[in-house]
Length: 522
Image (cartoon, rainbow, N blue to C red; front, top):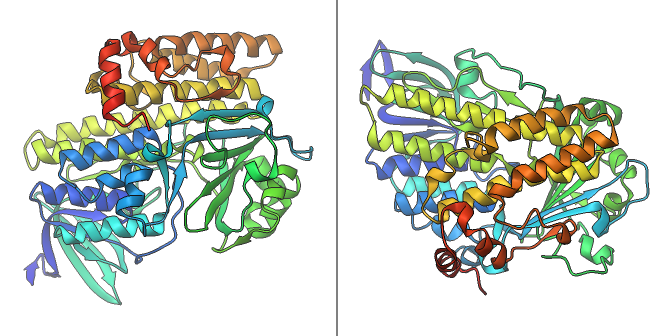
């Protein structure tokens, strides 16, 4: 025991991490590898139900980079479906081969076909496929790894206040009814939107420009039917439709369906306030059933399903903190802000943030320049959050215009596939930011196009904007997204990447070596 400031301290640490989800535990592992003492503080306990589960190719690549850079051998198998199943088969996850979108009209007969769909493959076969993270298992496993590496863990601990002193922080909490005081040189907040530091420091919440107010309602289910078993699609899609992040879109909102290999299915709806009010999301399961009654194809999928978790309602989904760092604290991107689960943007943003934070801890820890680098981290995090909000606001504004929605979504897939390719080629300078928001040409063009997408009034406006979007995508398109012959279905094709080698400052030989090294061919 130590005694400082007239209070009893449980212990002193280099780093205190608020929150023990995957982001907090992963940050703790990195900090331990850097030789820092770490405390993880969690108000609940594990395993626990968490939403936010769909990984992406860029997310998995960023996780793989962290595992390689900081020698985390237990984590690396979790970056691909095949290695996950062979090394950690008891950790629940789902097979994700791509992104699937179907457009529906509320109260209209449901249609499942190529003409009202968008399918974008993320990988060529199951062995190197992405995954949905069953967070109860995934988060618990990462926490156990952090503990094995020497991080101290305080569960069932309610964080109450923070006092900033010249050389350290005093963190006050209650654990099992008893006061606990921890000292730390630095605190990382991984508690999510409106989390510990937001409350303890009375940080303001900023509105996201031009972003609609949205709500969410969700749970986990069993006995959810597969779309490909209910409907004859007539053509062979680029991947099994249900082995993906499945999105059912309607004007004003969307329903997600994510399958795990333990029989559970994560499903929920995110929608603007008008839709949320119309169906009264606050009523939980009855609201869910009212919504499904207006979406016949989705209702059919859930006809025999049962919720196995209480329905959760989030009355305001989006969040943006007015401040992201202080002298001795920082919010991870997941705590600094959140936009929407659409397109699974949260994981890559958070993993980019962890990577940047790790670099600061490695090279600037406890040095006079650390505050300067934290300010840069804060700026990057804020800019990426705003770029995501612009993209998703454009998508929400056009969920009733299927052709324009698809074109706007391709802005995301073009930026994501270009970024993944650049990083796999060890050329991260070509894509240092999420959604290429600081790219000299694509970034400003994307911002302008997304602003225009909020003000579409005529069919001519829509057609002109779609043409401009495709012209903007073409210089960074490494995935064949500009090919009209694909007709809404985009497979992963080696030829697309080989033909686009010059766009990532490479040649065909370098691309072929990349494809071979990453297991592209079965």
